[in-house]
Image 1: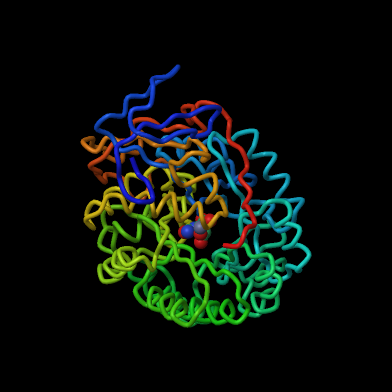
Image 2: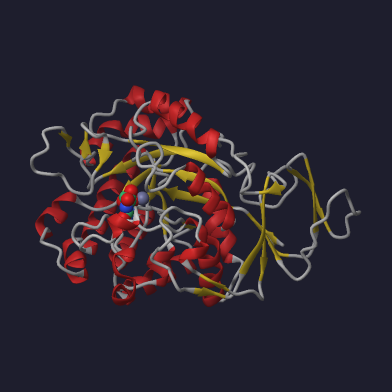
Length: 442
Ligand code: NCD
Ligand code: ZN
């Protein structure tokens, strides 16, 4: 069993969905799960998923997202705000919460968006309505017409609002620091992207069009604002060695910065594109072996504390478009835990995995008193893993609406056996609850 102090042998007693005792040789009770020889782990908290709900049910919805999450040992998902309508106000957050409650098979939390037009009042009311944090898409303009967050601004769209930029962050920094919730950024500097923009005929063009300097510059600039204001900056989907260096510099300079990366950046490199095709087209892009090794080292040293998925499904038809038109994003929530167990095993300490996917993410979400640990008083969100199992990622076994993801064909030396959400098998019914951060000093 995973504990904060390391692995140990023990029994867990659960009553009314909550862990009541964790000790060796507890008396038998009404229902027993025999987990001898297995890993007993806290459920994962995936801090970065895209449910596409409301807005794009053909890509995914809360039901298919959370069924995939449950199958993979993810018992809390934090959903990004680039749904349609975007989550830019308390009202939008509340209606998305009602929708998610009717469908969610695991617990969920909701991010709010920072638009270039956002006001302090909007951020404050989203926090009061239960937002887990705020996301700023520094490189993505906002389409007022379709209310969508776009990776490229169509030149002829009159309804485009410019992306939130460093000015937006600086303008709202005092409010964000006072609220205290994490401020996640999609870290790509728009000026650098503009300078490197080119037609995308192949994977090499994608890499050249989104250089790692764009990530490093965005992190440095946002890091400077975060340090001065005392706000909590969270770097989403870190993808490069220069980005990691920038995050370390910001932390070294006294900014409060947390960093996440994703399995696709830890398991794949540009060379995999030949095999995967557009399934691997994600933003920021999967880069070189040197970047991958730097990220593994950042995880090992604890600079990167969280592994999320950036689960971003699209339809098979969309992903089959020519490279330039195919939208960026890959599903991943179902393979988060297995990916991280494999990566942690290869680093030499399998018990790092629950730290990256459960304990540190629960803390980011303000859930450190209820999620992310197997301790009395915590929710009985428990994942039982067979360390002698073997799982091959196959589209046919995926619950997400986009079944063919970037990790198709990968083999993991583990198998997920049981997933409990508050003490009962997760996945069968819409039992998910909305989580709200406990606004304690973090
Ligand atoms: C995401 C999406 O499709 O919403 N795509 C992606 O490639 N990661 C957007 C994002 O997280 O940047
Ligand atoms: Zn994302």
